[in-house]
Length: 430
Image (cartoon, rainbow, N blue to C red):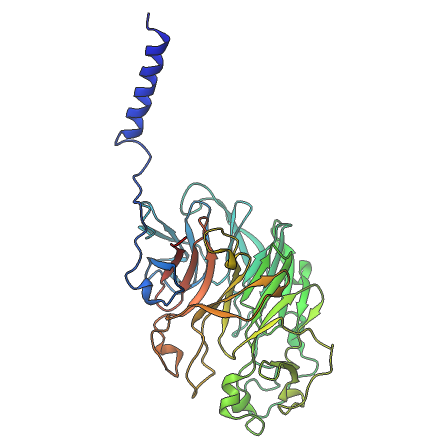
């Protein structure tokens, strides 16, 4: 009979053999990520480096990162038959070596909640249960449908809080609700009929399928032209957005605005969004230089007339005109230095409406937060996406940041809409 000591030694030897066997499921992981020699051509703060996770994944919009590191990227248009790109790194070097496409619809919004992957088209929000596969195999549910068909600002970005509230951006289908859209001197419709079902944020139940905007939606906030950047902040317990400001002040109203003012106005507005808030579109715009809310020229303004105090909600911070904010995430990881914790990273896509002035934006900005309010001004965290020092057309940009997400290790992921690059920004110094 074998002794107890020998039996335990035999068991330990068998376990050691299994762990070292080539048939073991454990894959050898490299000790370091494969950082780009040029950080993917990005300029980052000291102590940060970047991995180019993937290139050419498609027309990337928002993205989400699962607890196991899998990355899901919403695409503006389908690639290889799918509207979502799924990325997996099986070797641990940070570079996706498995890329698959799935989904019947393309769109902008994508997110994770309670074991589901949520994603949106221009007129609906869907979800599919996650499993062990890179591409989920479960049945796709339609959570909300019936959003208006529209040619402008149709992206249905969304966010979900811990209570299961689904907040959806429904952008306004116009620049300024003119009687004749984008026509010189055309007045605005008053009241603006587009505000009935557009130009704001609607709330739904994230767990209930078969909802429609008309029957089940609750208009949470209004007067928002287009908030592609929309996010719930768990730390503050509140909803935030960064709004795309209106266009064409000079081309539509040359008697009141010159080309320089057209490029700089209005500001892109960081909004604290609460139930019942009205942010004044299309009747007003915010002048980030004067720090005042102005009456829009379509409604009798001339660039000098200020809106009566308290009539509409004010932004909590402003950014330069036409930077085009496309996503926001509040940093919940523990990899970055303490100064970044709970702060907001915002992806600025860059816009067309600064010409003939040089284009601007095309960066990731950072805003430190103190509860519901910024703790100071913004700073540019990641730059160099555009690749050119000065240019007047967005088509000249090498890359345009569109989505931001935080990975399970605290890395910051960024998507690019031009070449479908996915960046992973990592803090590497203690």
